[in-house]
Length: 105
Image (cartoon, rainbow, N blue to C red; front, top):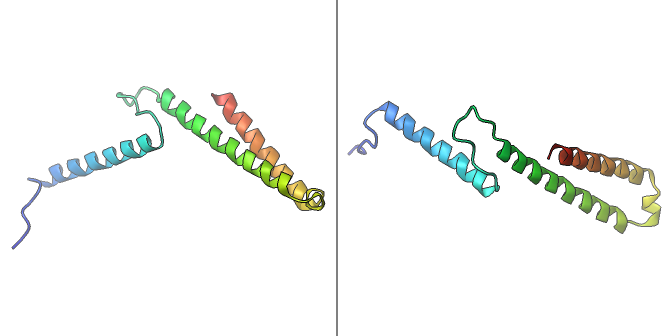
């Protein structure tokens, strides 16, 4: 016995699919702590963008702190090595990225 149709036609099925996708996107943004998009798509999502930039800045700051802790826990011999110099270069790049993100806020 065939399963009864949920939707009267293909257009209704497609509309339900779009609604499910939009709801999933809203749920995902809510889980990330982002505010909802503006009601009108022509209005800029400034609050949303600022929230995303704030989250990015916090993440980059956390990475920088972890990298600094890693560096501090290494031996003096390692800290004077060429690998440590490469590591410091990366750590400085992370700090510059954080400063650039903070400048956008």
